[in-house]
Length: 411
Image (cartoon, rainbow, N blue to C red):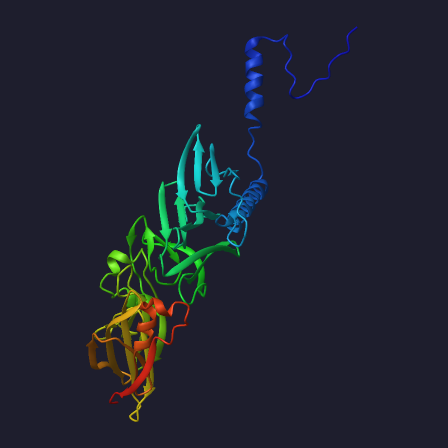
């Protein structure tokens, strides 16, 4: 005799009629019809509210995606030129991102699409700078041959947009991690006298469609190819002087750079003197530019002066009345010999910058500004004789310039 199965509240004997079976199943699925006690409802409600709070707290604590490093050879002396590195990000399912020293690409459904280029691509970081919850690919790249600048390029894969932070010949940019965020470093361009000097560090952010070092000027921060300059309370005056140079708009991305020689604070203003490379021009690779920056208006107060040439030098001194005098001298060089020269004399009284005198000449002089005037040097005739006479082959050349006189200027 087969053992008898025990009956339970959920047992449904098949020997009853189908109608009764249907009614019993409906009863089981509906559950008890009596209203549960009020205290039970209150406990369940409290549990649900507590659970919801716990979930919401957990979401808030997670916050935005953290910045991550994928590839970083910024400080490496050896770049693996033959390597290919790949990664996948959960926010972009079905996409494989691929790095080589020359580009960053995306492979989706068997097709590869180039996102960023470089010569080479030194580093790639992952960071949500747009705030949409999806990380962008932020790269540090080198560009150029002979003249090489370092810039930041970023690709928003969700929107299909590329951003760039560069200032060829003026600044170099790098990236690093800092407390879960992506930091930008801005340094003086490596080809200048102040090569590699760290100027500022800040968070990589986006503002009005361009990426920038948060809280600073955009300089040549680019959204695609549009420059949108924004001035801060502490601008780089050498850069702003360079922007006033007459060929800046056409040569800014070729060979132009600038660095500060002298600054002096005044009443609501700052005097700035800078040497500006005017680009690939026969005469103009060592221009002296000076102006008076109005700190409240954030623009130049009065004219910006240029003493053009290839070999700008200056001197400065304080006169008896307390004013600062600046003497600028510049020479244009042709084939190793001095051509025309320009001299400018300026006075700064704490409120205004005034050009007191300016003169130009074509003689073969070398002018060296010193306190109170100019030391004048003339071309040594013996130098010319030996330089072009084969009889002096092998004979050491004398000094090219010999001291002639001192020319004072009135203070």
